[in-house]
Image (cartoon, rainbow, N blue to C red; front, side, top):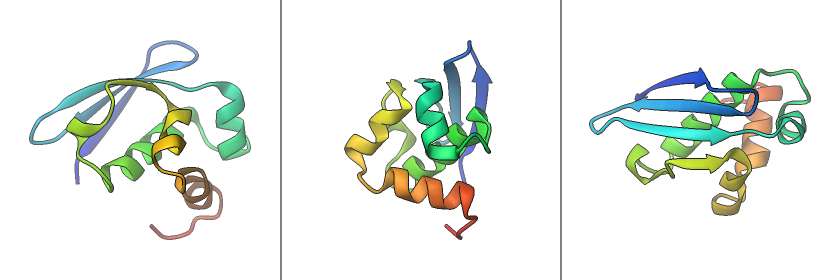
Length: 95
């Protein structure tokens, strides 16, 4: 599995490093209202972003992931994202 490292840049921005055959760096923004929608305030932003990258990496290579994006954009490309990530984070369903 690829290693994911997250660093807080400011209140709404995070740097995500994916250590893989071809390492990548991504800047992800996360609006508080969207984080609340997905986690109910029960999960940290860092965990939400990490699990979101695990979701993405299960579907595409790290080099295919946008280098800069808002987390809400994932649902445009993968309509099942919100349902799956919420289930995984809040209900502890297996991957």
